[in-house]
Image (cartoon, rainbow, N blue to C red; front, side):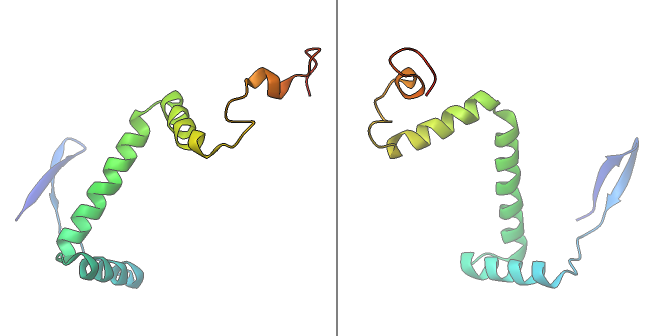
Length: 98
């Protein structure tokens, strides 16, 4: 299959990939063997998952990521930190920082 993609206002021929890195070749073979997929399918799925992760990571704001971290960590907190007011943890009875 011949593919063309735009590059600097021109259509450029997209050549097939030829991976020469021995570690990458080994990893692709291992992934394909573990999943039962062809090497091409294993690479396609791995790249698709990585792109999905990167797009999701970049599309969410900092506040969304921090809330997700808080929701993940909250069940792990032990008393007195689980139910304490933040002011009680940070300040003494006179309002002076601990």
